Image (cartoon, rainbow, N blue to C red; front, top):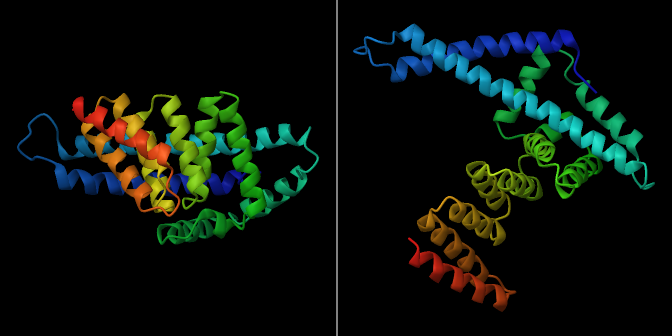
Length: 252
């Protein structure tokens, strides 16, 4: 379930070169020529290092997240006979075989930038994605939050349009006290499912943990607006929201 070393090495080289070009472009745009302490090249090298570290971290999280998902599914399959782990392995192997050259990988990256999901490009089935999600959720439910965070990061990378994936990433980020990451994940969940109430409530929880009660009020009011426009209004939840909004306003 891995790419060939040759393709991986070639991709890493290409990415490294593109990061270098991007770093110089960014540096040229923000560099102050009057700064005697930092030349353009030094500034560009600093940006290149930071970008490279971010890319390495993302790559590691995706790789580890995939492994954690698969391992969790394999463990579940030992007691759940309805899980066809071999079918999952076959689907994933076929998907990864599409990375048979740097050109193919770059072409798929271009399509991803145009809005096509990795899931679609790689041909990962709904069944496979559901199993991988169950693996990530199993890790979260067991309290394995660092592993679960990587797992949900992998899932949101593969299919960015899934509400449940972003919600899961938000929950685990909140438990790890990565509150800004959690807020971003809940915002993505909200964009995946317009009209959803809970992402706004979860964002409010994050803002309150950050002692940002102004933003908490905004999120709670958005949740209230969504609830009021829903055909199935939960009156108990509506009362709770109004109480929370009142309390948050007193703490702004």
